[in-house]
Image (spheres, rainbow, N blue to C red):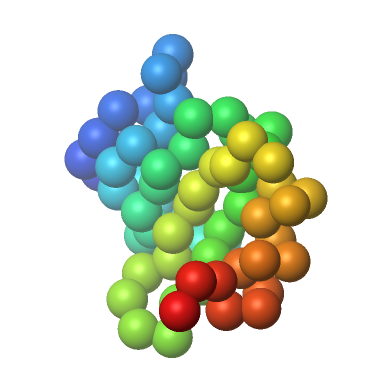
Amino acid sequence: MRLLGVGGVFGYIGWFRTKGIGTYRSYVTNAKKSFLIYRTKGMPIAISVNEPDEFMPYYLKGGAK
């Protein structure tokens, strides 16, 4: 369910709620290349990246510091 934002042709951007996840923020332009990040503080974030295979190792190492 979309709470606030855009969902459709240009992607899913905004706040959404689902039964399994609860409320989360979404910055997804390609649903096939998206994933969910659970944070220790705040709501989860769904994002999509062009190259998920390259992004995941970078993210798991802590990203840019």
